[in-house]
Length: 299
Image (cartoon, rainbow, N blue to C red; front, side, top):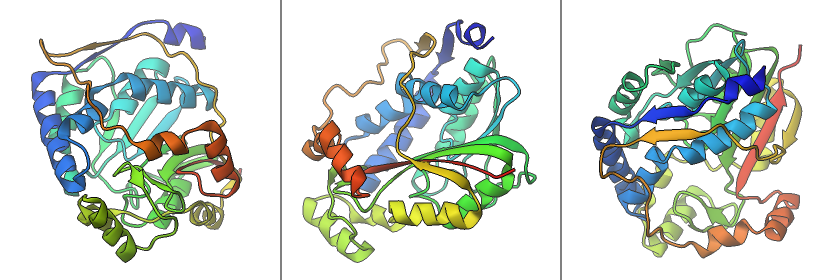
């Protein structure tokens, strides 16, 4: 049954209006961080293939299907929600309050959904701390690089627990501030820096330190504690999903538009922490740059 659901080519349309929205978002984000040009972030927003690769491997391992209800906390434009509905016919609900540097995101969400009506998902402009969803109503919760940005990560984890059905599963990834790498600035980071020291360090590197005001300095120990206090069981750390080949994807862009950023700044530290041996050692020490966590709500 699953193979039949994933055989068809997924076709996503990116309109000129969506490109304009994404360019505003990318420009705002580039200004907020001060480390990379807007083209770098435009690539993230409108290059759909990496989102599909990530979602397919995670979703297949979590056994998503037509009867599955999935909530993505921090769904952005809704790219993964739309792809998830296209692949598995699952009901996806995207939670995205689009505040701060993401102010134009509301227009992008609306344009993206209206130009891809073949795939549907529910969009909630609410916070991860209070989604407004009924208790025990979803099978799976996903969240990718979001908990470091929310107002209160511990409350978001409690909300994830509340909306999950007994036996429901959760998968989150988030940046670690016990690591030697800061992913937003793509630079060397001094582990366990507090906010004031972090701002001084980022200013020294020549980037905009103001962005750190909206960052939660999450560590692996903190994250596990949040999940344990919420009541989750079978907590497992690390990436354990095999990379699966996703169904074919066709993205229709406006004529002459290419989302790829051809001259990305090379980050030595990004490459260094991603080396297999380095990553393994840092994981043993609890200092990996990105934390992956799976958990189950007890029955």
